[in-house]
Length: 545
Image (tube, rainbow, N blue to C red; front, side, top):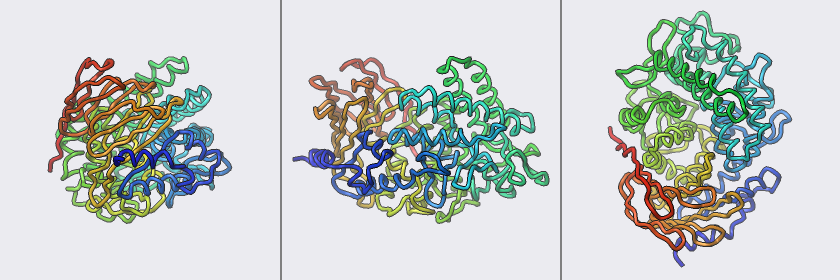
């Protein structure tokens, strides 16, 4: 038997919940229904994956009498709209969709009469002292709706809540009449300890998110990440409005107005980056993960994204540390090297890492995303817990433990780079980057991944040379390591994408047919059966100092 055969045998013999040590309740049976399983020969990734499943289960519990919802985990007791209610839940939707639904509805149910959605919900109640919005809620709602069966009642409830919150933000967070969304305090963006907010209070004035400290000489800020959030939010509200049979055009107009305000007031053309603008009109020249947040809100075209990669995100003197994207530019003298505390002043944060895929994939830069993920995957294989922060230099685990964003990052990274990932648009991604080349003895010899989609059981297995996909136990696809094969919902290949920075030549086998291809990094080859229809590529950006 080959190592691939061994990994498949191990995969097929595993009971996920039993192996993870989880009692089979209704929520956890929902995970079993996804058919998700993982097995690896060699290294510690398999053990870490099961630890992630076990600790994720501990993060799912009722809050203040609710049904089971996702909790942030670690020292954070409850759900935060910045993360738990948005990007975390968006990833969770692929594994336990009923918990994502319940988490979204928790925030809608706790919405205040004036329209404000709480920034957190804990057993003590809902919090309203800041807004703390990063990932657009409407995007996560829309993607969950598409993935989880198009629940119209859920979509209507969330849409109505988000419409009211948009009105609240327009009423209370545009005091200067610029069209931007204003930051009143540090926690509005969750940027604890960031120099971005030095000499700014942590919370809204007198714990009221509608007010800022009148004695501050620099508040309020015109905030690029908050403005980008609302622009993207409105674009997705347009999609939801259409789905509900309402007029989407007003939302598109509002989205464009937000984008225009963002570029006018917060973009510095010379530096090629977004900054806050304080109440005196001066730019707050702190280069932080605000750039990645803004790009993840679908701001900018392909050329702007490429320029941002070259100048900032893949610049090893700015944000591209060996272990993750840092929260502050590394050449800033204020860079905080203490990764043992909740700091957005330097360390790599897992919330940044789980937000990053949307930005990279929106523009087709999947090879660079994979390149950034592999050192983090190697580091996590050696951890004994799931932290909030990483040391960008060593990959050592930092602040807190049992933190759902880092748990979900691991589950997502394995599925995204060497597993089977269902997309909201109906595509299935079968990605052949088996983690066979990880540092620090983390490499595996072979691995296998399984998922059930539309009642069909798929299995993917790979080693350092090849990837094989089975459909209900029958070999369906085979291709070299370094490719991603994209199929429709029935498993019929429609495209192949290069996942390595270098060109990889090989053969795609589809049942009894085959096609020989050479695919460059980030190149997408459209297929019709075994015939090449077109080729497109955005090129690959090489990391540089």
